[in-house]
Structures are given as C-alpha cells and as structure tokens.
Amino acid sequence: MQELHIKVPGTSETSYRIAIGSGLLGSVWSAVDMAFAKCRRFVITDASVAAAGHLNTLLQGRDAPTYVIHPAGEQSKNIDTVVAIVEAMERAYLGRDTLVMALGGGTVGDIAGFAAAIFKRGVPVVQIPTTTLAQADSAIGGKTGVDSSISKNAFGAFWHPAAVFIDVATLQTLDERQFRAGLVESVKHGLIADQGYFEFIETHLDAILDRDMNTLETLARYNCTIKGRVVEEDPLEKNERRVLNYGHTVGHAVEAAGDYALLHGEAIAVGMIAAGLIEVELGLSKPDRLDRVRRVLEKLGVPVKLPPHLAEDRVIDVMRHDKKAVDQWPRFVLLDQIGQVHCENGQYAVQVGRKIVEKVLTKLK
Ligand SMILES: NC(=O)c1ccc[n+]([C@@H]2O[C@H](COP(=O)([O-])OP(=O)(O)OC[C@H]3O[C@@H](n4cnc5c(N)ncnc54)[C@H](O)[C@@H]3O)[C@@H](O)[C@H]2O)c1
Ligand SMILES: [Zn+2]
Image (tube, rainbow, N blue to C red; front, side, top):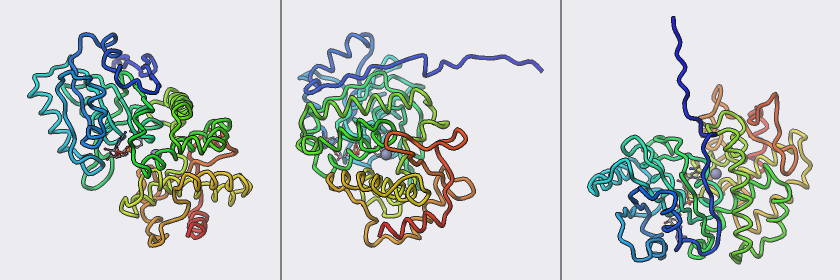
C-alpha cells in the first residue's frame, strides 16, 4: 500500500479582518473595493433590515444585484431560500469571481454564508451583522447553514468570512426584545473567558441598554477578541470551541421544547442559570456567583426561569436527542470561576448525572 499526503489548506493559515465602528456602514462598499477589486458583488439581506434603511446606507445609491429575503426571520432559513438565492445569482450571470455581502442578523448571515459556500463550489462572503446576536456571535466563526423541516441547521458548512464589518449604529433600529436577547451571548463571553469583561457589562448595563455607541463598540471589541481567539484555537469544534456552548445544553433544549417561542438568547439565559445551578450542586461554585449572573440577566430583562407551561420532562427528552449526546445524554460546559471554564482530562464538555440535571430543572420553575 502506498500513501500520499495532500496538504489541506488550514484555516489557521489565513486570517480575516474585523472592522468595528459606529457609522461605518456607508463606507463598507469602498473598503471592500481595496481587498476584492476583481470581484463582482451580490448583496443578501432581509425585508426588515432593508426597511430599516441599512441596505440603502450600504449601497449609497449604487446598483448591485441584491436578494432580499422575505419574510425576515427564522421561517425563511431553509433550503428553498438558498435555492432561490443561487438561482438569482445565476440569473445575474455571476461566476466564481463573486463576492457575497451578507447584511443582517444571524438568519441572513447563516443563509448567505451557506449560499456562498456552495455557489459554484464556494465564493467569498463578507459578513455585515446588524443584531446584537450576530455582532457578538454568528458573524464570526464560520458556521453557516439552514434548517430542515426536522431540525435546525441540518444543512450546513464551515465557511469563514473573508471580512467582517460591525457597525454598532445599525443596532439603533433593532427592536428592544431582539436587542436584549442578543446581549446574552456577550454575557456568556465574559463568563467563559474574561472576568474583566463580565465586570464591564455588570457596571455598564444602563449605557448598554441606552445603546450608547462607545459602550457598544467596547462590547463588540471584547466579543470579537474572545470568540475569535476560541475559533482560532479550534476552527472545527473538536474541543476548545465547545466552551462557546456554555448555557447551550439546557438552553437549546428549552428553546426547542418550547417550540421556539423564546428567542435564542432568552433560552440561553435560562440555560446559563441551569449551568450555574449545576455548578453549585457539584461544589464548583458558591451561590453568590450565580446571584451575580442572575442580576445581570434580570436587568437585561431576559428570562431566568423555565416558561410556566414548559414541563421539565419535555426538556429532558429534548436533551436526550442532543446532537452531541453520548448514550442519549449530553455533556455540559461548566465554570470553575467567572472567566474560566471547568476542564476534566483536557475536555471542556463534561458529564453531569441526569439526577442532578432533573433536580436543577425543578429549581428553575
Ligand atoms: N452561525 C452561528 O455561529 C450562529 C450562532 C448563533 C446563532 N445563529 C443563528 O442566528 C439566527 C438568529 O439570528 P438573530 O438573532 O440575529 O436574528 P435574525 O437575523 O432573525 O434577526 C431578528 C429580526 O430582526 C431583524 N433585524 C435584523 N437587524 C435589524 C436591524 N438592525 N434593525 C431592524 N431590524 C433588524 C431581522 O430582519 C429579523 O426580523 C438563528 O437562525 C441562529 O441559528 C448562528
Ligand atoms: Zn448561542
């Protein structure tokens, strides 16, 4: 037998630029000119982002082939939308020299990133996130995809952006509930990686909720640094990247068991309280640490308990179907302290007995 070794270009060998600012959307087009001079552009956004005026700000009167996803939001995050986008790109005679520009929240970013990943075997995508969730989380890290009728993100690809432009001014038009829910991922970043960041959030909650631009820029810088560092270490989620799933094991189950009535960030808030209660049960933490986290989430106005009509056994059942479950039971990311994830034998997602989780869920009622 002979062996040949072909080097697969590693994602760690390339890097991409993340620009953060307030009011930079109007200059994104010309900023992209420098790096992608030879590319033809295709813009993807959704109806609400366009109605909020951000598409006009991006285009500045230019004419570019554009696909506006309608209706906005998760219900369009399916393969039919991707097919429609790819066909629109073909109708515009676009080829492999195309650059996709994704303007919107995580829904647009995931759909557009996936369409870019598969269009003519892959063209670059620039992410221009416009929600607190997308600016903190989904625009960075290269996960793209759409839902099937059975599960979320059933179709997907790792497709890292060629560049990311974060304009915190776009957040001014985001509705209050979405704005607050998306901030939960920022709290998560502080908890898993940086005590100083968590304290910054704790002490600047009023400015954050007032959407003070300087404060939002600071959040964006912290978020990109933390998520960027974790993704750099583990681009394909073999181990370290799992720390980003803090609060997500119970959170995803709460989100799905409640038929997605809660927004993602809202469900993750409940999941982070569950993780905190598990930490107390296992002696990893004293209750006062959890009280600090709960205070921040309460001030953000996101739920810290299970929705009243959601039965615990329904949540447990969904957890048994978790895609990362081993023997029908998922693993958990836990904290040793604020800013530091608990690690067992080099693993960041650890086993927690079902009895403990059941007990914790009863405390979440
Ligand atoms: N790829 C990843 O790593 C990753 C991580 C987390 C979540 N996600 C995905 O992200 C999606 C959720 O993203 P989201 O929370 O950003 O929601 P979203 O993109 O659905 O946006 C929420 C709503 O706000 C509107 N909107 C967006 N920006 C606006 C603005 N600036 N002004 C006014 N309206 C605006 C949208 O049109 C939509 O109606 C989910 O599908 C989730 O699976 C992906
Ligand atoms: Zn999340």
